[in-house]
Image (cartoon, rainbow, N blue to C red):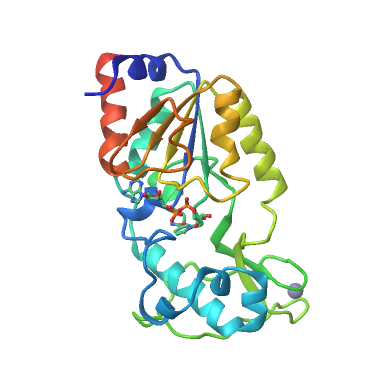
Length: 253
Ligand code: NAD
Ligand code: ZN
């Protein structure tokens, strides 16, 4: 069912980089960016909800959206795709997991050292002084359709708290970016899972890996901007294909 050359390449790989996007969490019930927004959020576009200007224009609208999303994520559980990446890591000398996701489903599945290129829903900070804000790990009790919610204030400078995610127009965190660049320049194989490969600079990583001689494997039910660069395009859901791959490698190795 899988190309034997693909399985051989994976078995021989000493360093696999896995690069994930919103699609890897879709089967946990977390909507991707391109899925229609729900409830109160239906009428707002991404620029309004995910940019510094949008936050400054209406902090309660934006903070309410992120608290609602944090609730959805904490109510969700890792799916077979998250778990298969942990299994792949166990079967490989070295695996580096780079994610664009702001949820913690990889960590809850058991992945270690996850590189979060776009920050985390679970690490809010002060908009003014950037100090971290310790939020409760309890599941927020937000209404099913969401609501506007004033962000809390920073205990150091009284500034407003903002979500700890990278918004449109913001830079990706430097340390994480460097770690990701090292991974794509040293891996033998890069597996891109559930991402449109449109958000920059993250979308550059699989291309860099290919340029550095790595085999690039893509898992996605739809066509993406990476199709013509990937050496293997595996069409389907991450929760079906990744466990299948892990199993295929295990049974012959
Ligand atoms: P995207 O929403 O633009 O694209 C999702 C991709 O996943 C699409 O290509 C789609 O075809 C694919 N997909 C859908 N279901 C899938 C499945 N079951 N298996 C495999 N693939 C599937 O997401 P993106 O490319 O990650 O970029 C959007 C930005 O939005 C990112 O920066 C990300 O941080 C953010 N985001 C994060 C989350 C999250 O943390 N869970 C959710 C939504 C958006
Ligand atoms: Zn502050």
